[in-house]
Length: 308
Ligand code: NDP
Ligand code: OXD
Image (cartoon, rainbow, N blue to C red; front, side):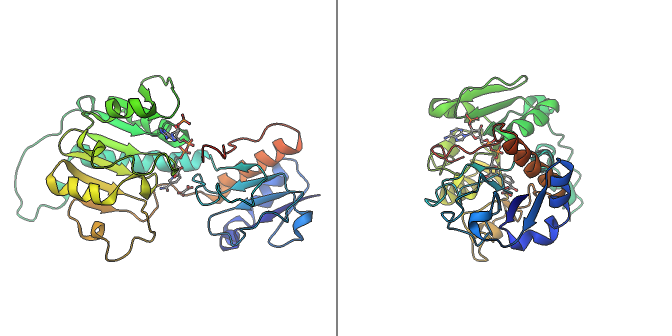
């Protein structure tokens, strides 16, 4: 019998049925528990809300399986010696594609001018075709690649940027610190889907925010620290950046007195770009446990040195 410790009690109501069911469907004889003697636990399911911080007593655990894609709150935990896997799940990806495409189209089509038009102004100002609006996606991982491909399928010319070189059909792919400048220069929509690591902090700063086309739009569903808040506010006030739609922040919930809330060129969404859904995430967890039990390599393993 495999013992799976569900270390995210706040999420238990959502996972109580689908997780045991998914383990059973994967052909595993497993029990999912909220508490257990640490030395009896085979796998740990983790979320940032988990009270569990000391992984040392879990001497038998073969993996820590995160319900979140972003692992910045656990990756540096010095007590964690077990392999760490992040969440890569088709539903999460689907949700992110919908958020990114929806917000990109809002700005591309200039929808706001028609949704709020109290003076009933008749100003025919059609949007250019998507093929004339360059988009840059920073981060070409599970989420960034799917979003970039969805935007490219709508004919946006899309540039993607990653740490290591990549080749993705339909995208212009650039990489490394030297590729960032070219990736941002002239972009009219910039999407940030990088993980939070020491290297990605303030990727968008006073210098790099000057590179996109004047009036460009920033969409940040990645992590708050990818952007220097003060530099963004200055770029918005100067008109260099036309609008920022932000889903993630340095402090969440975003404090009531943060200037983003009241800024006319900022849209705040409350970290809802993509939700981990229990049904599909349970299948991902079960598949990884099945693999580990059969001696196969774990999927979506985090590189502790890289931090993602
Ligand atoms: P991945 O790990 O699959 O992809 C990360 C991408 O970022 C990779 O392309 C990677 O490059 C690139 N990258 C990492 N470091 C650097 C660097 N220093 N310079 C350039 N590129 C870099 O992550 P996901 O796509 O699954 O998720 C991305 C992030 O989205 C998560 O970390 C999380 O913060 C956020 N997220 C937000 C959600 C929300 O609701 N707002 C929901 C889920 C995730 P390479 O390909 O070379 O490794
Ligand atoms: C995640 C998130 O990382 O929801 O999964 O932000």
